[in-house]
Image (tube, rainbow, N blue to C red; front, side, top):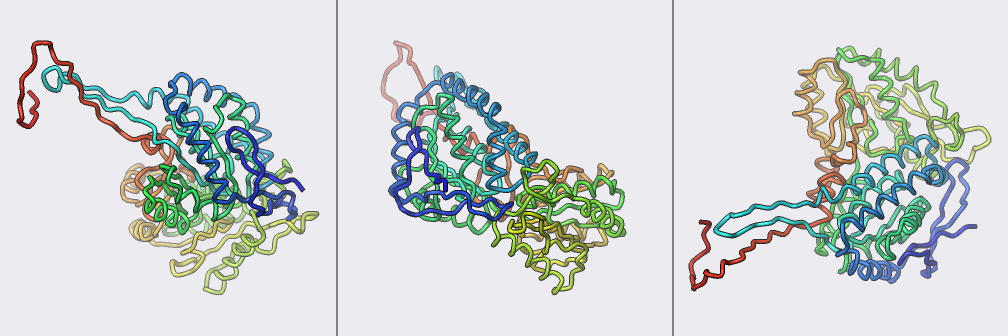
Length: 497
């Protein structure tokens, strides 16, 4: 059985803790690899390598950094098929979805290639007699990222390319369920010429996470995952004096007004609810149908859902793959049976789904629930699987009140032909990312990604301008080069004249 370890100081480093975790192929249910879990000492070794590398990388020229990043972008593009195959093998998502993940990650690498523009700073001259003021941004030092299983390549690429472009060095702790993609990203970075120690990867569990959160030489931590863990990361990291951005979970609503194109809405609901088997923090998990929209919309969603092809991610015919683990699959299935017991109508029950020849895989068919109410577990909890709930309301006002009462505020969408209704919605809804006839409004790389309320802990969204600000700190420099004739003593408070 293949053993995966760490990447520290520019090379693979075998784990020495003696602790390992299983890495499964979700389509077969078989353990195909194991990954070493880092001890606190091994995390410290990665931090020491990053700290040493920062001595030169932090003062390196923007030209040097961008030359490496441009080469890195070329290598990632050349290896996108290989990276996608690693994702499919360990996560289970279909190959086209894995390729899309790599492409979205590449957007942030491309943003990082333009870092000279983002770090230009500001200058005001002659603010007082012969006095100039400059605002500049400088790197933090050693920073870290803790990333989830559902996007093994994209979410790490949301973090470290921008961090190292800003002059920091990085310690990445990917999900122990899907470690191979992160290791490949580090290997390609070294091939691109990134100096040893600038990017390090330590695999592990909570021991490694806590070692990162408590390490005195780590200045900032980025995290993407569930809300309970995001809250823990933020609380623990800030208590240890770190800057923290922790993106949590979601319960994303899609509002469908009576004037909406119902075919477009049904297609979008299918794509947003069942893509990547629903294992997305931006998945639509609740359709809010206004008035008489519900019945025809549900009919169209069911018609499309019944035709979805579920199977191994490496089968080109598959449109949806398995869930990440059997435990998670069983938990997702329990929400379908639980919703029925609580009074919802189960239009489609995917809990007993299997794939011929892959009976031990972590399969869950698509599920569709109607007449869901806010008191039901299927509505209140983040299911993180292919379960779509429909809530019926009579008016727009009832819909917006329902959506804004959610503790989460990650992403949301409205489907309508009415521009006035759409504008009102985008101003009134309490969420960080809004789609108008767009079901998964993930921003492009030069805008920032992040939610509101319990979907984000910290003051900065990820990537875009917020990402640059998170990975740097501001400094204001006030300068006067006196004329040789200047002199004398003045104990008064400086004035601008």
